[in-house]
Length: 386
Ligand SMILES: Cc1cc2nc3c(=O)[nH]c(=O)nc-3n(C[C@H](O)[C@H](O)[C@H](O)COP(=O)(O)OP(=O)(O)OC[C@H]3O[C@@H](n4cnc5c(N)ncnc54)[C@H](O)[C@@H]3O)c2cc1C
Ligand code: FES
Image (cartoon, rainbow, N blue to C red; front, top):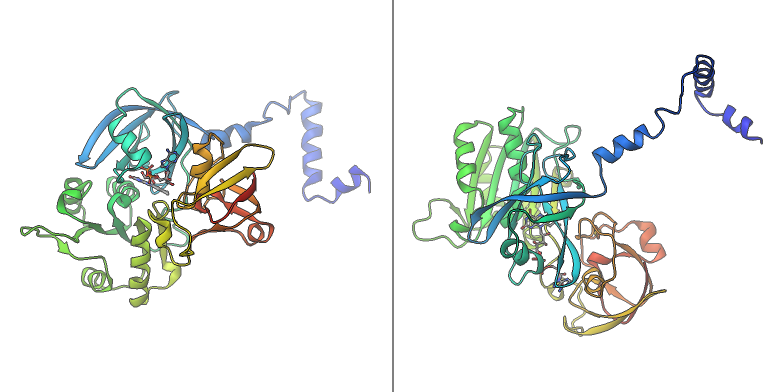
């Protein structure tokens, strides 16, 4: 079949030919608009942003907000709940970490990210201790699916947050209350102690001013004078706060342990799976404690990893393959660093890795031996292809 014949099969081809004839006849340069769509896409979803820290706001003893403005004056829009992946170079290692944007989407002059210290954390320590006004970073554009979707989600959002997991909810709460949106938010926010609570006074203030926002902190190791709810965010506590459980979408955000804890509690309440959304803040701190981890392999056991056509490096079983590759100076694109986005996909040519539950690997990736390097832990010597 000739090219012309193939084109004839396409719907709307005659209309396009007619438009081309008219443009040619009247001397209109129909190539002027060439690339316009791509330019628009790049503006809305840029590959990389350059951000400059304007202010550092101390939130609690262990958390601070970095307010970052665009170096070139432009920030792409985002949905409340999305994150950026921030690139850093520490001691010669280039790595990145995702941070949810805690400012509201209608605040277009800057992005806030609110970082909480992770004990001995590689990047959180650096961001909290080594960064100040004027420092510049590269980041990805806003990304992620953890946001309200009017087509599928109920107007009443029940947000279950743990520790730094409150950040995407802060953005949603600011948006809904500031813009007077026709939605309700109930936030149950778990922390160990009262002084760990991030955004406490702003949350209290907004809850007192807006009828569509309910705020209930939950403290697991309360002081004697604590007047908040105490314990964990379990089925009984959720039932005691909500009048009825119907017509609500539940959002869980926090460390992976929190997700493991809350899902069975929501099941006890009979909440269907399609009414639950989740964002896990990274991989488990101790991967060897995960179900299915082979007991004979210790976190410190080292294996040889050969990159096809590249270098050979040592990797510890207790550290993700992505971290080991970065440590050795091998660049692998990454975004979510929690097994969800597929950006860090690599081919496992030979050897065995541990992949924790919850990693969203496509069926075809499984069949053809692709793994997410951010959520794969070496259990033997490996050969990989980038
Ligand atoms: C979608 C999403 C949104 C998030 N939003 C927030 C947020 O709003 N606020 C917040 O506080 N956190 C947030 N997090 C968590 C955040 O991305 C980091 O995981 C957290 O700050 C801890 O990072 P860390 O480097 O300090 O901890 P670490 O535990 O040190 O880092 C974890 C990884 O770094 C590796 N590593 C350690 N040392 C080195 C080294 N020398 N070279 C290379 N790798 C090394 C470790 O092996 C480990 O794999 C979010 C996570 C996700 C997935
Ligand atoms: S970086 Fe997203 S799956 Fe690994």
